[in-house]
Amino acid sequence: MRFSFSRDWPPSLLLSLLSFFCSSPTGVGAFPTPVGLSLVARDTSSVNLLIDQDFPDPSIIQDTDGTWYAFATASGPRNIQAAQASTPSGPWSHLNQDVLSNTGTWTSNYSSWAPDVRMVAPGRYVMYYSGQLSNETAYHCIGTAVATSVLGPYDPAPTPFACPLKQGGAIDPAGFYDVSTGRRYVLYKVDGNAVGNGGYCNNGVAPFAPTPIMLQEVSVDDGVTKIGDAVEVLDRNQDADGPLVEAPEMFRVEAANGTATYVLLYSNHCFDSPGYTVSYATAASASGPYTRSPAGALIQTGDWNLTAPGGATAVDGEGYVVFHANCASGRCMFGAFFSMDGSAVVVGG
Ligand SMILES: *[C@@H]1O[C@H](CO)[C@@H](O)[C@H](O)[C@H]1NC(C)=O
Ligand SMILES: *[C@@H]1O[C@H](CO)[C@@H](O)[C@H](O)[C@H]1NC(C)=O
Ligand SMILES: *[C@@H]1O[C@H](CO)[C@@H](O)[C@H](O)[C@H]1NC(C)=O
Ligand SMILES: *[C@@H]1O[C@H](CO)[C@@H](O)[C@H](O)[C@H]1NC(C)=O
Image 1 (cartoon, rainbow, N blue to C red):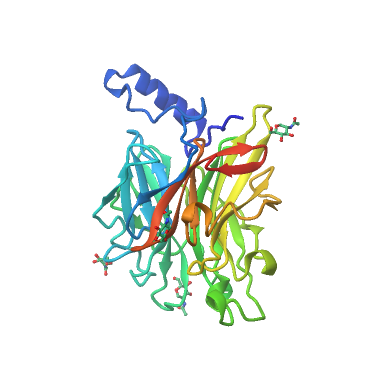
Image 2: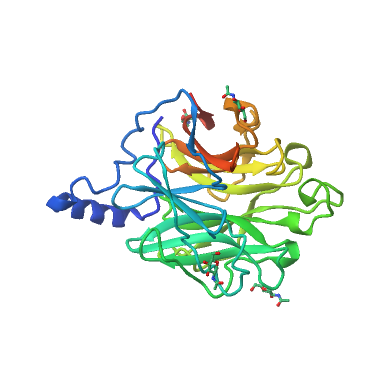
């Protein structure tokens, strides 16, 4: 089994960058670790605590110089947090800066959640995030902000990217670039919990609100211009998920025989309960249809002594996943190597 090369740049761009670095003496070693060529050497023994402070809903990206960055939900005085490492498995250094000090005029500039940064072209970084509405603070919508370097400053768009208010708004965006089709997407969750009828995560009392995970195609060049309508790829199922599915993240793997599997990571149950999980479903194309893993949750309370794991993001092509789980300071960032067994994701060896 090998992992496909599925980073965020079109192959043509990568080839030109590769030739640039290969022909530039000072560029040797500056190109990101080889990807798509082989699996990284892995320690399959365990799941590791990577950031021992509140760092919820982490996402992760490798910059052109090889350095890795993680971004997370607001904590303390920062709208969006960031951390840095030389490998996904750490050691990680928390950066004491706010990478989104202006979340946009449509927001309250408070309570920003679940950022995801993608490099769509050299010098164009897009941050997708969940911003709290200034006119209706019970709702969040998806915002986009762009920067010329990975740590910003990020310049927010004047209006939200997706804001289905009647359905509860939207949260938990994640970018996805499909290397096999050259198409780029943004996933997000329609936040039906914000219009629920109370109880468990405000959606534990009938009639239950849908919380669909949507897939919106966007321009491959800018990462923000929508192409067509969003399509639903998964929704909550009362028995399997309780009040919600959320925290989508997509990656693509290709078996040695060329069969591709699209993996949709998601969380279910309520984030502040021990029922929260990292779960996944698989499909043969980005838009689905998705089949839930028959084995149930991928990572759940009790596994590796974790409580309420969720909000996962995978490192495309390299078999590493970061997520949060409860810790003394809130929700800390953990990480684990994973591999594929056919279309099954296997964490921790
Ligand atoms: C937005 O919030 C950040 C973080 O709390 C703060 O530094 C910044 O000054 C705020 N900006 C505005 C326009 O209120
Ligand atoms: C509140 O703000 C959102 C996001 O900008 C907008 O879509 C919505 O129409 C606004 N609602 C009202 C009542 O102005
Ligand atoms: C498991 O986690 C709890 C707190 O979450 C901690 O008190 C305990 O020491 C941990 N046990 C092991 C074996 O790591
Ligand atoms: C290709 O390999 C995968 C993973 O080993 C396997 O699940 C699948 O059945 C294979 N498909 C074909 C057509 O051989």
